[in-house]
Length: 156
Image (tube, rainbow, N blue to C red; front, side, top):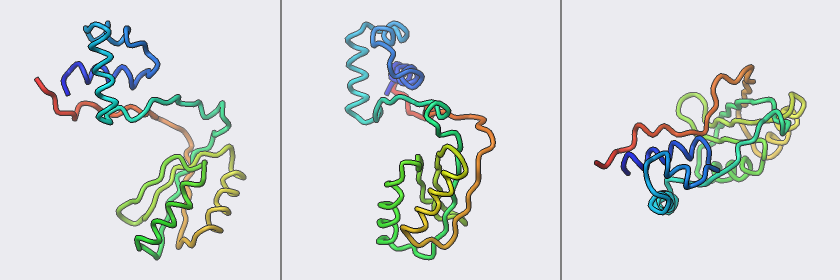
């Protein structure tokens, strides 16, 4: 991956709908070589997918809740069942297995507190959990889907 690839990735992270001709112009390439580079980045899985990022206010997902989960079970089978349950909830937009005091962390988006309460009740009905702790975001200070590119090795 060279400096041109990194420039292309930066531009696509800012706006995935940008025309290849515009990218080419901004990075100093002609259109065809630029398109080939983008195709290669897609084939190699560097570009995972291109998506539209929705405005939470406009889609009535105003409340962000970070849900910390602790469990007594740490078996592979329990995790498999737990993951199957969690991925069924459209409100869960991120799901992590953690180190430390918390076993799992979910980021949940809902319209309001009653919607979160309904989510919580559905969750604890579906699988046994030792402890659930919810933290509500008061204000979003930073949100980005852009990955830092400064750590990529650069070919000369």
